[in-house]
Amino acid sequence: MSTEGSNTGSTGHRRPTVGVVRETNDGERRVALVPKIVPSMVGKGLDVIVESGAGQDALIPDGAYKEAGATIGDAWTADIVVKVAPPTDAEVARLKAGQRLIGFLAPRNAENQIGALTAAGVEAYAVEAIPRISRAQVMDALSSQANVSGYKAVLVAASESTRFFPMLTTAAGTVKPATVLVLGVGVAGLQALATAKRLGGRTTGYDVRPEVADQVRSVGAQWLDLGIDAAGEGGYARELTEAERAQQQQALEDAIKGFDVVITTALVPGRPAPRLVTAAAVEGMKPGSVIVDLAGETGGNCELTEPGQTVVKHDVTICSPLNLPATMPEHASELYSKNVSALIELLLDDSGSLAPDFSDEILAGACVTRSKEND
Image 1: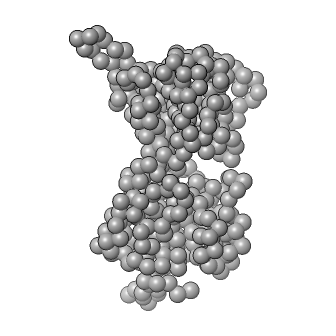
Image 2: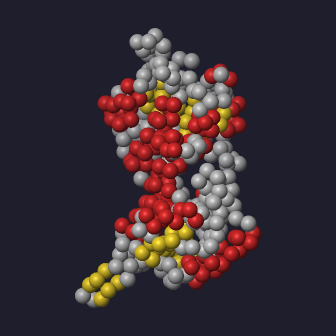
Image 3: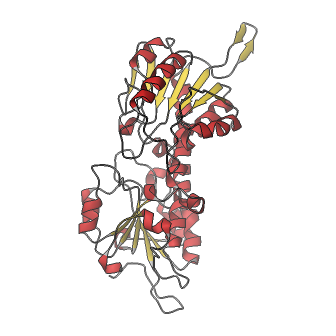
């Protein structure tokens, strides 16, 4: 397959090409590779082709890529195509057998393009499927983007709140600090706790995995202990039993009513988001309180959530922003670029040729479709 921008290196083999394409999904402002990553990729024997305007929504001009050593051209012809959002039907149609695709591919979702990519003969790597092991931390795009979500969720809450976050002592009196509860303390939750603490809030974290209590305390927050242990595999929580769910729901319902801000981040891979905040809990919160639900894409953690919307129920503002990382495209793209470039490096052998070793558990886990052409 001929690839625009490719050339032959000193070792005699054709330099593999990486194509950075422009995102077409509504609201997606991130780009899969930023210019500062290009020199290191070129140094590893790769040529980088960037689709014109790929970085436009992240405020990165084509010229910045050229200065970094990339070429502007048809990125869809590259050996490795990198993107952020799952490909559309039209984008899958632009790929050819033998190409490799890296991005968020939603492999656990019922509606995905895995079947279409398989039929097209594309070797696809889903960044969500990268095993969460220490050696793969640098490639962990879920974590890098969750940091962005957790940070921005607190800013959304502060913007919507009718109260100050920090304690203020003024000539007119003292204002108590806002109380903030974060439900689900993975990467997004811990970042939310840390950010709320920086803004002066009194922070509390809860998770069904009790082993994360020390992490919650490490960012200056209190631990809400409801007496339920649901530690699961791969760093995720297991699904609760009916009895545990009822116990958790009642205990949380009582606790939630005492907080000014509740931020929810609880997700179970491949399943609808667990309902942690009931309508009764919302009704019991003080008027002017705020809920920011980060699980809206899988139904939401709050019973009254309307995914993608901000609504007011029982005088409580409920926000369910979708794809928060896309609202901070500069740093979100920079972090994602490092994840992607680390994965690409793993696809290369010592000579710089594309030769993925599927005995490596990272590649074996991330690869969701195999191309016969590359076998």
